[in-house]
Image (cartoon, rainbow, N blue to C red; front, side, top):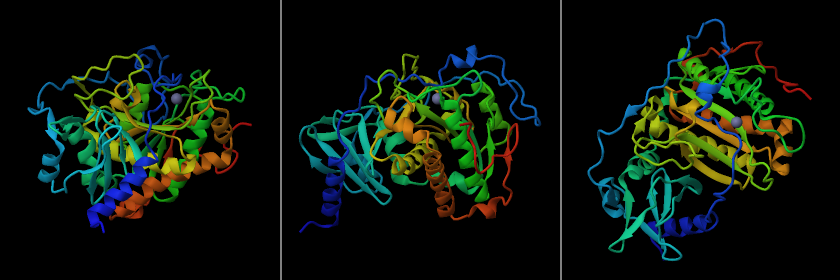
Length: 396
Ligand SMILES: [Zn+2]
């Protein structure tokens, strides 16, 4: 009869068997917050007067050449022992060796030679594929510090104890329509705004201070979205988007992004420079970003179903790099996929997406030991235009 560790391994093996397989790497996404938008965007429109938001300075790129680890590849068993964890549990030897790390906060499954790992069944992309050397698994030290450690420690969401101000960023707006629905002439900018309004109502009802970067169909530059969050001292920044792979109408699923930690290659580059030697202000929140991304991603998957495209990291997402708080960008499904486009066009589905995000945030804040009302009873929804309305949130 297996001992406790054996049961955990068996459970993990069952979970892992349902979630393996390469993802569609060749898919092209038409909808991205590209770096060039920082410079090519039209003159910014001040989103919320007052307070006046000064022009955003260019986001500095800080050299990350210092503090480099001396040891690149670390034996996983040694790292587990040093961190008070039981030895990695072998799950399978073929097609590639895989291992499970059982912790008090969850189970991390990794595979030799693969960037795809899983945290409690949820797909997480590693920066460097684990290797087998001398018959035992080795993991890159940056993945240990930036991917695995924040999860197994499970303490990074403590930021929700002290600042329940959230800036919700409905992607695109104005001339920038974002992705077009395959079903007709409806655009991403409408759906993201509606999602944000619904989410804002839910969080405000829980005592959060909620601010939207835009509440109507106006274009707003990425630097101004960052400046907006900074001006309002956001505790969390959440950028909402929908995806497109047109003309491919098969691609489907959810992706959640956070900024790539310095020194690590990004999951996605889309042809933009991915200088591993750069660090940005938001890199100060690497652990919190990953925790937040996983939490929101898991909640959204429960709405969307089986299409897990993973928590990913990117360096070119201009709206994230300059944030001075935990920040993630969510791609809530594909407008180029007929089935998902139909879902996204349904207000009831968007309400479910909003409820999932709200649940993820509220639940964690309450678990952190301090309910929202104990921090700030004031619910404030600010942006240009009127406060969000509960019904008829979108144009027909
Ligand atoms: Zn978008």
